[in-house]
Image (cartoon, rainbow, N blue to C red; front, side):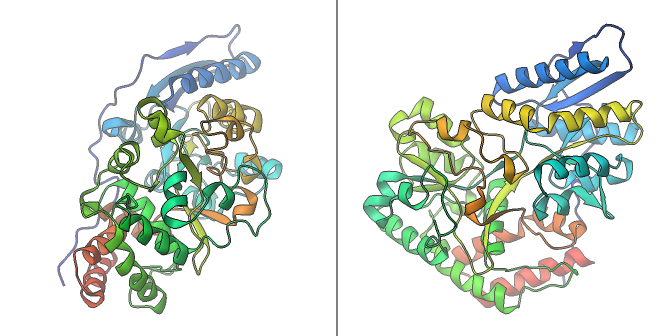
Length: 446
């Protein structure tokens, strides 16, 4: 067996100072303490303005002097900021952390159980994926955030689906409250048939099996829908299990219907395929549709966002999660936690969501009824089904769950899930792919 080097997000980064936008300073009369805040630099600039306004309102009411940095994630700058502050034990009082970073920074984070308990009492429980990422040793160490959280569900061309697959997407998932029977016919068998029809028509599903984040996130939801756990919650390799093998048999057929260059997809490849009119379906947040609105209006008017298919183990939607964390070495932790709680209350979440045109997703299903998703267009209702609605019978997912997180982050970083599918697309047999995956997974346990 080839010896594999253990990979974590922390060992993959070199700590350093991060570039940020100009610092915003809010000084209040008779300030009772100070907070130095970091937020994600949103790609919709007006969302940053709304965050400034909300923090300013809170600061004035609570007599806290606040300074804010909006830090881009481009080039890993936000990750570098986290690492620099972790090493120095000094930095922002609040900062955003995504996906696996909660666990990587856990030993210097302030427990947030009280904030989470308060929010869950008001709005309901978080889905299991949030606690999988946000809890360490049964303690919440970060609070799920709406700003920066998104999913990568399906965005299809209305006309192409109707013409080639015989499916009216607006009837399948209408832009209105529905019962739990809606969309039940949309399973992975129907997904396969639609892919076959669209591939034959020359507009294949533009879904990658490369090694970048989109491919990793998206393909992981396919595995989850089949209950195909490569490593289970106890850390046992399951690649030879019936569920994984059943999934691979399905996937062996499906990947042949994807574009020939799916193995080399980057995170923008699917966007380009949609906007150029070369694909009937992609997996993406509404940013691809928003770009089409600007650059290819006729394409945008023909787009409809809707949930992933239902598999034998359920319906799973790939998410990218963002949390707010407070350092345990912070100088004003009580005020920081109060502000985190304030920012995740419904009024503030809806205000920011509206400004981002529905791009940012609240962590609570009870908040999936904001007006913005009904109003944004064209066409009207195009992203109505972007948030998980109660009748979708769906759950957020992150690739490699439920493997022990210290193993799952390695699987995620190495792109094992799309790597298996890329090998199938290249013509390797199920036996060859299973042997490769077994050896790869054993390396993470060493």
